[in-house]
Image (cartoon, rainbow, N blue to C red; front, side):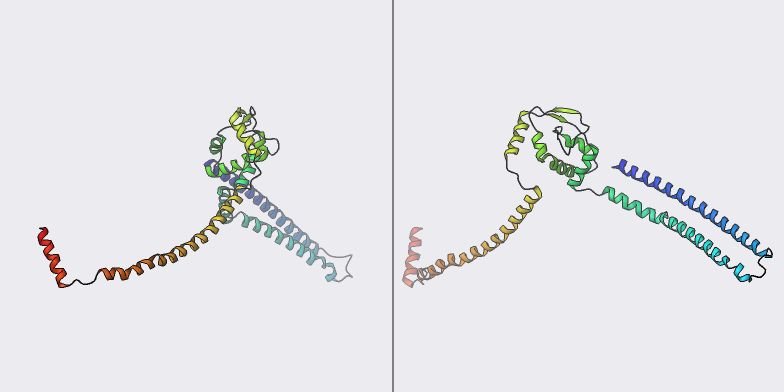
Length: 276
């Protein structure tokens, strides 16, 4: 990750050097234009000072008529040069370069989606990841990817799962087929167990995509939760029915707990003493 940031900084410094070189060229061009404008003004002043013998009958206004247009053209060219220099300075100002640099660094550090990362692997590892005829990958290739990629292991595994679940990859998993590493070098053969597992996957019907399956499971859970909340009041409603028999037995308990007469109390005391 540090190496990629260093490369990005070096590319930005090279871009800054090119921009400064272009700015220097614009300044030199501006100086040349100013010099030509001053030469034109001097030539116009010298032509005005010379006697106009041949055009003595013509009014001086007509002889000097081309002067304003020439001066306006020179002024407009000078303004164009100044505006281009100002734009170049604005583009190469430290604030703009700092903002541009921070935006590029942030974009470089933002993790891509698994599908976008897989597209990058097609370009970065053309001898391992194929868009057409596919070869089985080396066992444990996710460890090699983790060493070369700056992204998290979870993102690498998800992008790798998108590739190995493709029908063309499952079809390539035949017993004895040669596996390859990230550089396209041989890395073992497909064993019988892996081939049988792939053949079982080929026989299975085409299942829905993982994210669709997860969304469906979440939707089923959301539907089952209201059902559970609706069942709880039913249990609570059953509790009063269970309590009703106790209310019916209440009179029997009251009947059993009638106050004892004096004779019964005396008999009870005598029985206690006799027992002692």
